[in-house]
Image (cartoon, rainbow, N blue to C red; front, side, top):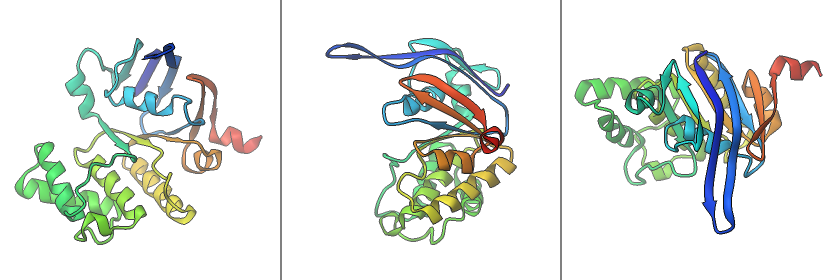
Amino acid sequence: MFIEVRQLTKQFPSPKGVVCALKQVTLQVAQGEIVSIMGSNGAGKSTLLRILAGLLLPTQGTVHIDGINAAEAPAIFRKQIGFAAGERPGFYDRLTGRQNLDFFAALHGLFGNAGKHRIHEVLEQTAVASPDQPYQELSTGMKQRLLLARTLLHDPALLLLDEPTRSLDPAEAERFHQLIRRLQGRGKTIIFTTHQRQEAESASGRLVTLNHGCIEAESAIAELAAV
């Protein structure tokens, strides 16, 4: 199994004691799968993705990606992962999309011709229109595509996308779904969160439902269609 999550628990301190965001979550994902994590606000979706991305440490439990234990080899672990959180994209408004990618490519050690070549590749893969416009002038859909392009710069095996279509209209959301299916065809494993069942069923091969930090249900999309 490409991803193995075992007995994952995450607790946060609060004025009233301890809040348990995740409770003994166990999950396996095969290489090349697209899995949607569905749940209402506060279900634990973002917390799960942030732990998978190595941005949060679990209170208990383990995460392995391609056999690498997140706790034992965090630097190697993070090279496998591209994480996109839409609420804080971190782009510079006055720079163009390409200039923004040039900055982030340098953070991954991609300079000069190597950086330019990789930026050209990810812009093509994500079909970003007008990458030489200032970021602040791009449409919401193009901003989301640029975020996906940035996530792909270091060619990660696993993409973690936190509600990537939340601000998109239905047509642009469907185009984004087509993008991630093409990336799956390139061998990427993709996990994205959503609170919309229709999107989960449309864009992924398996649906995992979180409720109050627990996995409430897990189904292949083909099984759901047959119900």
